[in-house]
Amino acid sequence: MQLTNNDVRQAQDNIGNEGQNIDFRTTYREKQAVLIFLGIGLLSLLIATFFDRNVTQAVMNQNSIFGNIFQNYADQGAQVVTFVSAEVIAWYIWRRLNDQLIKYIMTGGMLLLALNQLLSLLQDALSYTFSMLNNLNNGVPMGLANNTAAVQNYPEVLRWSLAILLWVMLSWLFANWLNKKSHVDMNYLIIVAVVGIAVVFIAQTTIGDMKSLWGRFRPYEMTTVSGQTMSEFTPWYHMNGINGHNSFPSGHTMSGWLFLYLAFFVPRDNIATQRKMVIFGLAMGILTAMSRVRIGAHWLSDVTVSSILIGLLIFAASRLIGAHFVENQAIKC
Image 1 (cartoon, rainbow, N blue to C red):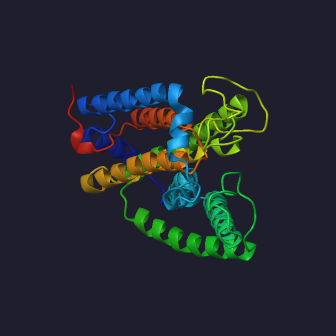
Image 2: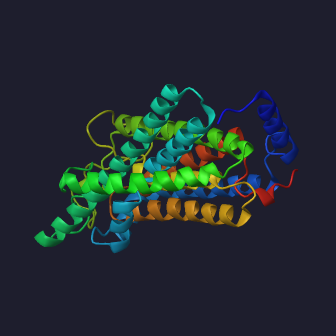
Image 3: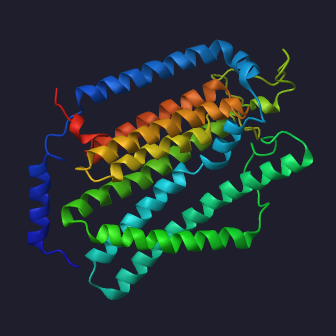
């Protein structure tokens, strides 16, 4: 469907009338939440500066069910956000363009990007799962071989079959959901989608570059984690350079926190679902960070710095979008 100039102007007027983009301000509660988040993060980093080794020695357990569940299935936040964004952009293009050839090419391209994200998501989940099962069969700790980059140890036909099945089902659901949205809603969602892809790119690039530059050994790579000797340990503020090790900051924690961004895809008048998605995103960020320390894949400082960086990035993105995490908390100060 092609929007006319009058439709565009009306949509813009409606956005202004709803107060979503006009005179948008950070609320008092949001300021409080950011300050509390930073306070907890800085306190955690201070503790980690002096007690990183002690925390790991006290809690590390590669047989932890909690640690393995989040290691296997919480590393997909980036793919989920990109998948949802690609679906929104695809069906936005489908509605907006009249030129049939360009419409099919661009919509098809975005849907292929969505499929690619499902394939990537399943690669992580399946490789970690099969590694865990293999470890159990060999009588070694469940998380022992899961802490490195995902490897292909699963039937490739399984990954493609699951990906295509999920892709068809989810694309159909997104098409039907978005078809019911007004032009105003779609104009809002396209901004969330584009910014979402940018957030994922910035997060992955930042964390990835820092991992390489810091070259920090992971806890399980130490000579011992149960005794007092950790021959390769370096504090979080010490850059080792590119050496093949990539503990700092935590990539899993980054992905866990990215689930929080999904709250902005919720319709702005659906307060209850917004609140639930924010709680879900916060839980995924915190629990994923805790699980990484528990399983010995990261130090406390690794997950703390990742949490601070990605939390602030998502907050900055919300200001750019002009959306509150929960809209009924939009009390100006």
